[in-house]
Length: 160
Ligand SMILES: [Fe+2]
Image (cartoon, rainbow, N blue to C red):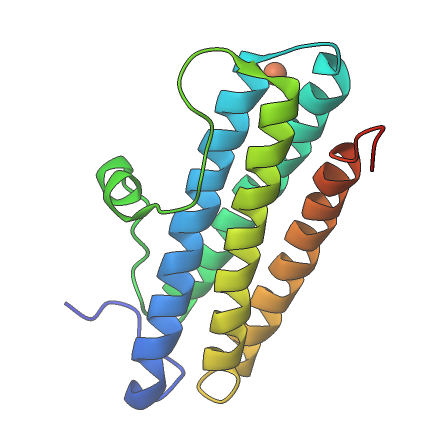
């Protein structure tokens, strides 16, 4: 069923649709692991990391909405169902139960780095098919790189 007609040619739709859908999965998953860590973090750095995690969640939710709506605008129906996220999400996240502050920082750096490297591949892939989507992916990458920096800066120990 074609409801919304696309403004980009058929040849560009597949790569653009895949880039947007996989970014949507990564961002929704990131918002879930961010909250999981926000609720379960323990340790002396609880307060600052607890708050920092909500910044990641807010950015991930906001951009998830933007990429999903970009897909819709191109006539590509986004899929943000929980079963889709559960089967397609591949970024690292916290284990279940309480998580030490130091482990939270480590896993968030790893997770954000994985998300960023996947985004950078999609930036290359969408350059010609749809530079407008590419521009959006660049904006998202800049924000996730900022978040990764903040966790990485938290991760420097006294011995480093
Ligand atoms: Fe909260």
